[in-house]
Image (tube, rainbow, N blue to C red; front, side, top):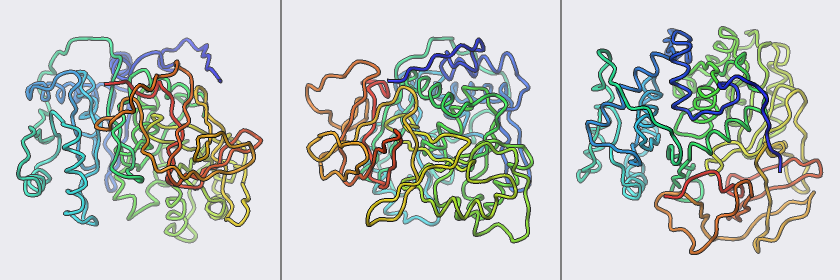
Length: 453
């Protein structure tokens, strides 16, 4: 087991505080420092640390008016915008459990969307919904029996006296993060403050994240990649971000390259398809200065060598060669990252028998142990691959609305659990790196991820 010993004296860098304490510290020490440049169309809106905290305080006061108390779940369904951050932090300020969920888009079937989410809403039992007016009309039409109070984000005061909220130490359950739902109904994993701090510290150490970095993101925050890597981790480390609307990015993907060039962004996370999307829609002959990039991280399964080859051929001369194209593997049940490739070198390729090649997902980050097991939960030897056949559900301490297995003791902190899941394919190489070649993966978890409710 790798432990992380940090000898820095800066509390923002070392991550000894929870996210609420960190925001308060940054707002007090660096009130005018910009945390986020939010891009919309051709314009940008800067959000300073003091503005972020003020908006979060106003959201918190609004939630209190609805009777929200510590431990209550606040479901947030909003279009992408600056209010996303303050709506989430406002719930954290009063000890409630915020949770982002995707909103209904024009490309989705409303009946299917509401059928799936109605079951999820019933299971969670939220104390408050946060959304906007037009979406509320759709919600009431599709769920006429909805009785949960709803706060419209446009009704949150935009100015005036910021309410004073009592200071408190934050520990235990922090927020509710939903898995993608690939293997069934989305699982709501309760992430504890301690687990978030541990993840941020370990992952920041793995990628050598410093306050000299700037993160560019178009990722939705209801996904752990957007929530942790591109919002909470930079916030807790005092690292600025440049945020874009995911739907605007899909129609104009080169806005990411524009943002990297203009704001000298050094890091970005994307799924595999996004690399292809950029290659396909970047105009021929157009050149960007991308020398500031330290890494563009592919967080998918599988990560494909051909994707990186095409991207390096298109953008290598602009400053993003193969050594800056990296991979990681993450899952909500582990807060976010479990494995990360090594910066500064090309990612190793796994050539499987009777299969297309895959990129390594890297080695486990500090504090994480990974074990691949077969259908009978027997460890798989190094250098081989395994595809589990188990159809049993995955149970995690701290999930909401999922029956837990009886009398399963929680191992000591720092002990890793290996849980077999249906349809997962993985390989552990002799170099200590992992290759994940299936989207049905739920093998990695630690008992410090979440808190029992």
